[in-house]
Length: 114
Image (cartoon, rainbow, N blue to C red; front, side, top):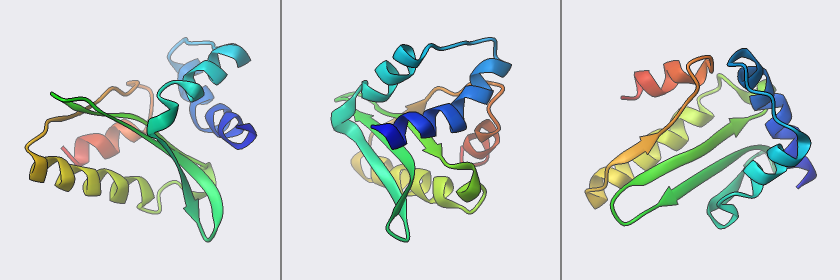
């Protein structure tokens, strides 16, 4: 939990603030704990570098959270995760959705990947 809270603050707080959203530490923790069973810690070289959270509903699959530490952003990790899930969703005949802040630079990645 300490890593995930630190990650959320580092990776998401600047985007929230740019969008006029201010979250308390309790709200950040609530968001991290939301859909806890669907969460996976992303590791690189045996160390945690991110969070990948999916929610597979019967009618739609949702990407709930993709968060990576700034030092590993731009290395293709997020794109590889999304592409892999896109292929899995296509094979299962499932629509894949997400929501992203317009102020989040990851929006470009999601637009590029369709």
